[in-house]
Image (cartoon, rainbow, N blue to C red; front, side, top):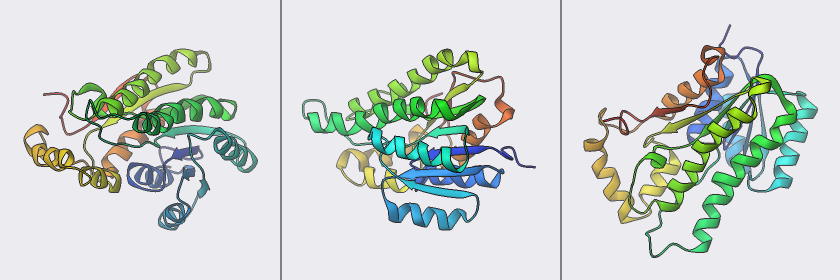
Length: 249
């Protein structure tokens, strides 16, 4: 018996990185998993990697019509949800003084609007006692340079975990945030290689992370699985840092 045996779960942004690792872990623990993402080819590869108890649905969480289609298919196939991991997100650097409206919109549309409406549109399908996990980030607690917009978006996500847990307490639906530190994912590697800011930051990691290395997607996935499972039945509204100690010392 897995920790999530018989559960139905949704992972947005489940086609790579932390989302894919979490979808795999959910399936290993006995859940039936729906994954969504913007790239059909990446979703197809993810489904092939996971193998069983998996359905992919292409869509963009910042588009309400795509979310409606996503939840309509889940309702048709399974009728309910027990777990939502609102993981889809984007990260881009932006130096203060050079931040554009396009940069702001591109980050907040997915990281804030996408998370909010993913959860809100999932509510009719969520069972009482369900678990919602929001993917925040340590950047909400750190004053890293060139991160003003991304950090603010993740601070909003962390705030959602508090307010949503209060809004949903009558249904015993738990809402928690997981905040990864630097994690060895395709998205992270693409980001840090996109600018001198990112390359400098990678060089500094060994001295700022007590464990002296990047996190692995599988390590974040195990923390998310804990928050999704009954093992965390008396935990709601928290921010669980999975960062090698980076924000703690």
